[in-house]
Image (tube, rainbow, N blue to C red; front, side, top):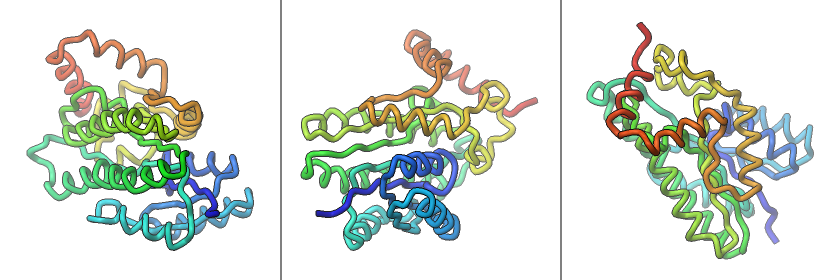
Length: 261
């Protein structure tokens, strides 16, 4: 019988790193996926010493075509049964859509959507066959509204939420759960990568700690929560958008994300 593992993408930093620590603390064997080999190796060494668990490292760029299949095949070669799948890797970009890079947009769609659904497809089939499994897809409060000045990113996160909800229903009878974790602004390098440090978003919304977001996500995943929105203010804001005109939502989103003056 193969040993059970938790596979985490984007495990080297931010929410992914904190989820890695939480799963390790709860004695899960881990498969860590990210581009940063040195960081992953150091993380593996530290966590195996502290928790006496098994950890495999897979260095992969999830913007590359067919990389999910390569990851899946690698875990099969290692003899790992993935019981928990954490699709955390992703990135955003800031600015007017017509000023953005087509290549960056394609990469964003690939990592935020294509690799995510490919990994779900491959591992959920195994989970269904085993009769157990848990999947967490990291979405965002951006999933619920349009995002002028981050149009592609918001659209990808809307996809992640919709896909996760639909998949959770399809897999319910197979005893495989799907959780869409929806954090708001979080203290990670996301805004550095997105070049959005000058937006009003950071001025108006206090970023949450990745540790708290990860702890919340782990708890809700274990409780089989389908949509997990972190933070009372975020939940209140999303609730309010149900009653606001779409034109008003677009206007407010644009003003919040405009650069500080």
